[in-house]
Length: 171
Image (cartoon, rainbow, N blue to C red):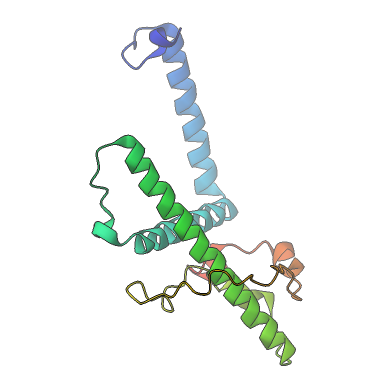
C-alpha cells in the first residue's frame, strides 16, 4: 500500500484523492488564518516563542559556530541532545532566578502585576559568562528545595486571553 502512495505514483487514484483532500484542508486553514485575528495572534505568539528558543539554543551552542562537523548521525544526535539539555538547564536556572527576584520584591512590598511578568523571558544571556572560570567545589552542596509558588494572581491574564501582539516579542 505504501509503495502505491509514494510521491512517484501520481496516476494512482487514491494518491490523487489524498493530495486533493490535503489541498482543501490547507486552503481552509489558510482562510481561517486570514479571517481570524485571534488565531493570527496565537500563531504569532507560538512562532515568537519558538524563534526565541531557537536563538537562545544557538547562543548556548556557540562552539564551532554551531556547526556539527561529525557526519555520524549518532554523534550529531548526541550533540543536539546535549545542546538541548544545556539550553533547558540554563532556562530553568533563569526561571529560578526570576522567581527568586519576584519573591524578594514581594517581600519588600512591591506589587507585582501579572502583565509585568508576562514581559519577562527566561532567555536571558547577559549574566552568563561563557568563557569564564567556573569552580566545581560547590557541586556537592545540596540546593534548597524548588518552590514553584509565586504569590501573583495570573487568572487575569487567562481571562483576558492576551496574545503576542499585546506583549511584543517578549514571549
